[in-house]
Length: 454
Image 1 (cartoon, rainbow, N blue to C red):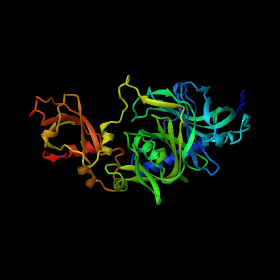
Image 2: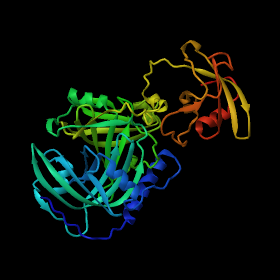
Image 3: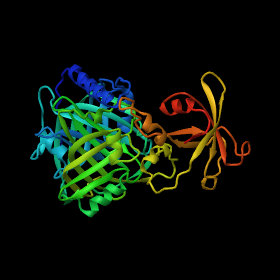
Image 4: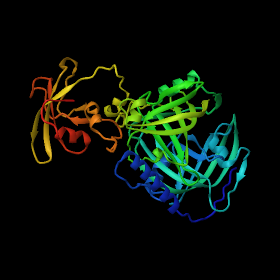
C-alpha cells in the first residue's frame, strides 16, 4: 500500500512571475509584436481542475541533475488525476520505471515503497493535461510535495504524487484533430538510442502530427507545451554522422511565446513524439535555435518563424505509451489544421491558382468590397457563397517589409469569406470578398488600386 504525507506551506510567486514576464518580453521583442499578459492564474482554478480530472493524458516535465529538461507522458483513461482545493493535485498512474527519466528525477532510481518529502517543495514540475476527444487542455506548473512508488512488474511501477499548483490556465490545441483513445499494454522496450536516427525513428517523425516540448530557464522556470500540424510538419533537416537536426514552423497560438525565449540560460529542450497508431514513443533532447524572417525562410520556405533543434540524444521506446489513438469519426474535424497553416507545407511544385484585383468598392469608412478575376480559370473549382478562399500574399508583402516590421506569426496566407455567388459574376472566373482593415494583409489590399496580382 502507498501512503503519502503532505506538509502545509505557503508559496511565493513573484520571482517566477517576473521571470515569465521577462521571457515573454524577449520573445515579443524578437518578433516585434505587442506585449500580452499571461492568462495563467496563480492557483488551481476550478475550471482547470475540472479539465484536469477529465483529461486521460498528462504530459509532465522536470529538470535532471544537470538542470536539463526531461519529459514523459502518463495516463490512458480519465480521472487518474484530480485537484485538491485551490493549491494541490494528486495523481496515480502506471509508469515505465526503467526508462522514464521524470520518474527517476522525482522519486529516485531506487525509490520503492514510501517516500516522504518534508519542508518546502523544490522540484519543479510542468504539466499539460489533454483530452483528445474534446480537444481541451490545461497547462499547469507546480512543485513536488510528496510521492511514492510501488513495483507492479514487467518493468512498470505504480506512482502516486502530490503536487502543489502555482499556475494554471485552460487552452485549446488549435491544430489538432479529435481522436478516440484506445488502451495499450505498457510493455516498454528500448529499441534504439543511437545517432544518426534509425529508419523506424525517421518514420515516426514523418508520421507525427503532434510533439510535446519542454524548455527551461535554469532553476526558476519550466515550461511545457504542444506543437501540432499536418503529417510531416516536423522536417528532418539532417541525419548523418555530422549531426541530426529537426525544424518545425512556429505558430502564434495565444501569443505567449514561452517556448521561444532564445536568450534563456538553458537552450536545451526535451521533445516527445508519440506514435498514436502503435503506442511507441520517441524522446529527444537537443539544443534550440529560434529563427525569424529571412533566417526562417532559408530553412523552411513560407514560414516566418521556425524552431531548429540540434539533436544531442534520442531514445526510441516501443510500447512506451499506455494508450493508442485513432481519429474519432463521430466528431467533425473542427480543430483540424486550417488551409492557412497547410500553406506552410505545400511543396513548390504544387499547382497554384493566381487571381488579379480588378474591382474595389468602398462601402463604409471601414468596409470595402474587393473583386478578383482568376487568371487560371481551368484550375479553379466551384464554390458557394459563404465558403472561404485562401489568398497568399508572400510574393507581394515580403519585399516591402523591413527588418523592423512585425513578423506574421503563421504565414502570409489569409482566409476570407466569399461574398459573391458564382452566377452573380462571370461564372467561376471571378469572386468578391467584403472585409475590414485589420492587419498587414488587409492593409496591403486597402492601399491598392485595381490590376494587382495576388
